[in-house]
Image (cartoon, rainbow, N blue to C red; front, side, top):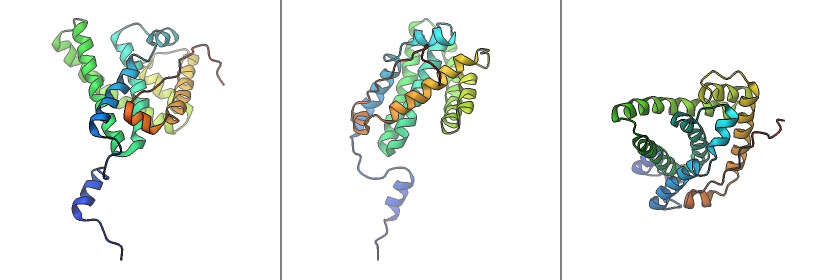
Length: 200
């Protein structure tokens, strides 16, 4: 008869601990930090601001940055316990960076706390909305983009269509990246956003 795993092992498996990690936790932590850096330093935010008609503010920066963080989260959720660890450090680093940026901009502690509460709620709503969009159709994803990036106020469908096309194209690219390289180094070489790219 096949030997059944012990109670302790079954509980650990339920909690998501499936055995020995392919990459050690310290390296996975660094990968989360590097992956976040790719979502800030590897993006030309001015292209998005111009193409989407967004003001050059911390809030607009957050909207575009969180979109790229979400794409990383979608990719890493495919990688079991290692992916979960990278995701946790990616999100932790994001909030720490936002606090630092806010302080550097002279935003008061009370204002920052209020903004962080709003952004935290928005971030998790964004994840749900984009997740639904990416597994459904372009119309659903367009609705998520309209609500999240454009705050329901965009009257130019082409702007929304271009961002939807970018997300689909970028997700295909990120999905194809080598798993071992992502877990070990966290480097995501983003494809550039071309606002003049012809729509299909």
